[in-house]
Amino acid sequence: MATHVAIITTPGRPLFDEQHYVTDARAIIAGAGSSRLEHPPLGKLFIVSGILLCGDNPVGWRVLSVIFGTLSLLLFHLICRHLMSSKTALFLATFLLAFENLSFIQASVAMLDVFCLTFMLLAFLLYLEGRYLCASISVALSALTKLNGALALPAILLHWIFSGRKDSARFGASLVTAPAAFISLMPALDFLVFHKFLNPINRIKTMLDLSASLTFATADHPALSRPWEWVLRPIVMPYWYEPHYLGAISFTLWALIIPSTVYLIFKAKQGDNASLFGISWFASTYLVWLPISVITDRISFVYYFYPAVGPICIGAGLGFQQLLTTATERGGKLKKVALPAVATYLVLHIAVFVILSPLSTWWSIASFA
Image (cartoon, rainbow, N blue to C red; front, side, top):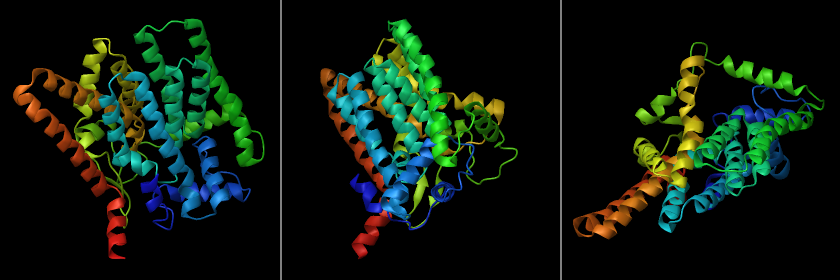
């Protein structure tokens, strides 16, 4: 929260897609409705609320993103507490997410993704607690901020199937609740935006049609990238300069995407619940983009990986914890090397975060002042 607040007023004008969402929020406040029909209403209403609370200024645009981003870190920690018996793995996973650049950037700007992810994480937590109905409503709220929030549902379904959970009748009923809540709540939220009730089915069709029309063949943007590129090479997508806002997965975590995924699959096959949930989460929020990109040719950007950062942190945390445990048990050279290696990696992770994030520019300005 402190690091977010330190940079919340810079830059003093909308950056990157804030130009669309802040303009849209101003139109909603003025009673002109929304021109961003490709997205559901809830995320836009959060930005509107921030402006109404704190004014039409950088704080008003971004304050709720900061709050939701901070809550998302807390929710991730609570999810890991449900999944992990090791305090070391719990600490490492949360630490990696807390100092991950892409997650920090998305929680610093007035875009829809942070609201979508926070409700997704809340859905995961409620599901793990066995509160299936509440989890489904949270999935609906996630999708009402951005349609990608619906990807939480297959993640939950995959874990439920392969973990052998019982109470299928109650769980099955909750699966129906998610789309029902989405369709039921959208007219009321649309009314707050357009001051009239709209047919939710037509609205869904419009959103899907507009989304499908944005393809690599029809769109031209220097930061366009395919989903497999996010994993195969580091991608840096500038949002703003001075201070620099860079849409980039922290290089230290990017290097662990494939190893962490392999480890999660390996441990999930051995019956580890945390790994099973992690790979279900990763498959539903990242792997799904691979066939979508090939089949639909829909445009994509590296920040679409944002919801999939969490499971990579889980895999890395579990992997590091396993390394430290093995080193302690075996002793010898492995013990002498393992702890310094993990410690060095964590220090490097912070260093990469400082370099990539706007904090490096802010600290240099503060020091000069």
